[in-house]
Image (cartoon, rainbow, N blue to C red; front, side):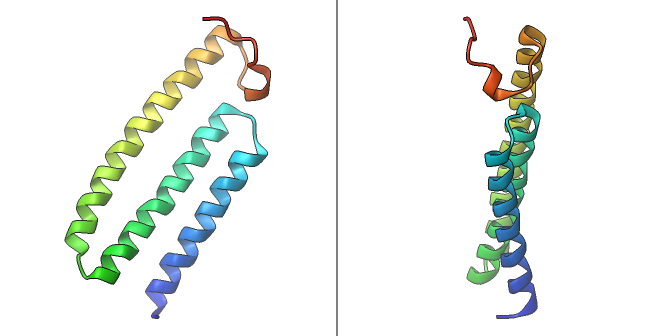
Length: 102
């Protein structure tokens, strides 16, 4: 294993652990969206690593571009939902949103 491999793997594992920690420890909807984004960055690093192992960096790059597009759409939709929920209820905390009416 070379230095690049160890760096990619350790950074990806730290980002996944950080994202899971953020999801578990917060009830703020904005922080939940950020936690998902952090974990998506770890997936990007793992895709780079997989492409490097297989020797197919071109294929990995196409997957990464697709993943980035999906990540942007996910962030936009989640942010829109957070903004609308905040406008309707005035709350950003997930634990206080148990009485939503359709």
